[in-house]
Each structure stands twice: as C-alpha cells, then as structure tokens.
Length: 244
Image 1 (cartoon, helix red, strand yellow):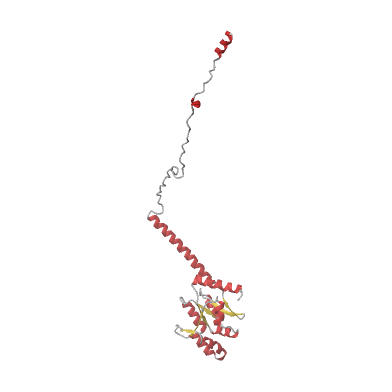
Image 2: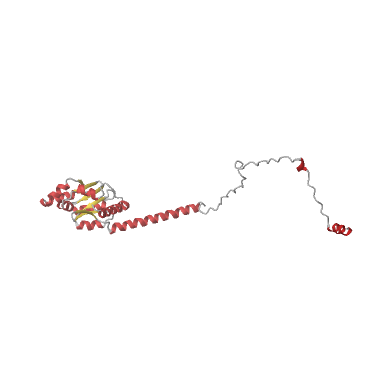
C-alpha cells in the first residue's frame, strides 16, 4: 500500500477512535453489493481488509436480511451468497421483513455499543448512513478497498462534543472558584513571614590560627639608646656669633 494511502486511512481511523471510540478489532457489516464487488474485483476481503486497516484484526458480519436477499436473487449472486455464509450472521430485531439496505440502516441507527463499520456499494444506503454520525463507510473502487472520509454529520458532532467539553470545563472551573471564595481560601491574604537570615561569623574550621611571631632579645649595644643631637634655637646661634 502506498504511503499516502496508508496515512489517509490512519488519519481517518484516528478520527473515529478519538471522537467515537471505535477501535480494533474492527467489526464490519457487509451487504450483498459489497460482497459481489469484492468477488468481481478478485479481492480477498479477510486478507486485504486487515492490511488496509493497518494490519489490525477484522471481524466480518452479515444480517439475516442480507442472506435472505442474496438467496432470493438466485444464480447471479451465488458467489456473494457463498461468501456471506462464511461470516457471522446477526439476528435482525425488527418485527417485519426488510430489504438489506433498510436492515443495515436500521442497525446503524440502533448501534450504540458495537461500533460497526458498514461496507456497501448501495448508493441509497450510503446516503442514509451519511445522516448518522460516527459510522465508518467502506466501498470498493478502482479494484481496491476504500474507507470514506468522515461525513459532514460526523465532523459536526465532533465539533459539538469539543465545544461541550470546553463549556463543561469552564463550568467546573467557575464552581471551584465559587467554592474557594465561600471558604475564604481564594482571597486569603495571610502573609508568611520570612525568616531573617542571621549574619554568621566565619567558619572556625576554615580560619587559620594566628601565628605568634618570635622576637629575639636585643643585645647590649642595641639596647643603648642613641643620643640625639641637640639643636639650638636661632637666638642661641646669633648670640654665639656676636660673642666671637
């Protein structure tokens, strides 16, 4: 499978997984038109469907109405009937007999838990399924299986769910703020006093002890004080000169 085709399928599957909780094993309900197209295009549904949907396990189903319709159409759909009998048959819960298209449409409207994929070539059934959000559609074209992109209804439902989630989160936040205000927790202005850091002295272990400097004793010659020359004042000098 080409890389672009694989990325497209993975993106669509992620859309249904994230928004409608559809995950593997994928449950695929097929009608007679899809089985006939697979037979005409020589497509092995069990093998190729699994590869196409990301190498995931696939479970195939038909309804009692689909089998009954194929039986009524006779020889032209004998091959499709043979394939249908290999799949698990879902019991129809509607009170009266319906065509295969009506039966699958009815199943899609009531499907809330199983999360079925619907495989069909029937244009009327396809249009009816487009009106129901979260129903992945498979069809055969260009000799290959194709998964239809999400419908406008599915996209709209996704947007509504996202908006509802945002609104719910906003209401929760508002309720929490009201609760905090009620208990005087939101506007609590109590200040926590910070402890003043005391000025610490130097680390005694990192300080070196003061060394005592050894001073040698003075000798007798050094002990005698030098006599200072007596400087006479200016008047004494003048008097001495006058006497001479």
